Image (cartoon, rainbow, N blue to C red; front, side, top):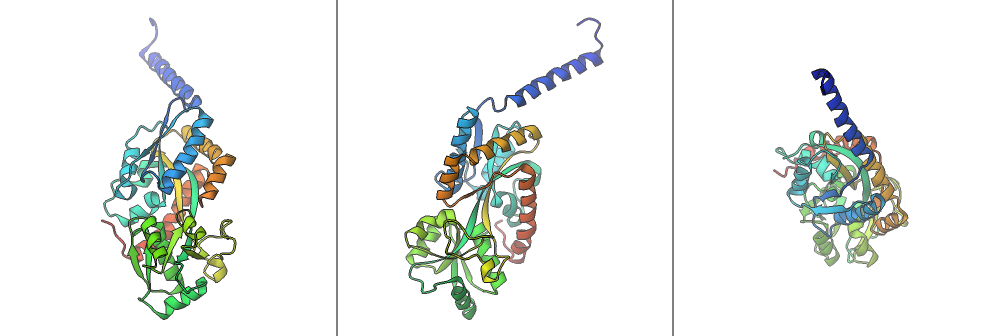
Length: 325
């Protein structure tokens, strides 16, 4: 282009690049979305991602490819997502383990949630429920607490693993109720629930999604829910607030994050698409049947929630001297 100065050529090139980027954002998504789930196939995190992802694919006309990257207490999947291009086409299922607990549990964590990710939305909550096995003579939460107070250090409780929401929910109950019990960690909620049902251990906290079939079949009995309100699936089971312990509130939180540096416009588009898929009646019904509470919050609200959860749980983790290094 004769007669154009270098400055004008540079400005023209920048305008062309910006125009292409804006067009690409308007057309988003224009190719398949890669959804990394840092848990094995068949887990509740995987089921939630596949349920929402199926509807998202229908809504956008683009495939949603679920990629299970389990290991390292979700760190392997998180690292893989953090290294991906910040273009909105790689998303990560990021729960409160990934974003809140791990930074307090590991001194040398291989990723930094605040530095490496941008929050998109809270997909769902999985409220915690206090459970006893079918052979237990304890009929309600007050009786269980009284028994545990009467025999400090004699009652054992199961969990899905050290530092999991299930474990920390029980530690929170211990602190609020003045209990001293023995923690028996398992490798996941399923084996812990199986031993609870079999009578090997008397009590545990579990998310409703994992425990629902045990409750429905009579293999576990729900005593109280660590939720602000009673659960629709368990209308006769009181909240801990009703029992005088309003601070005993805990849930596994399933969110969505993208690599840091993803343009805010794409983050907003992702959130809108995810929220629309979540609130599809068929998706709502399937998630509710699984004991999952759908959400679909804004990026700002999800980011604020991560901060609130960090301020609430890190002091408890520190006071317990928990470490997974």
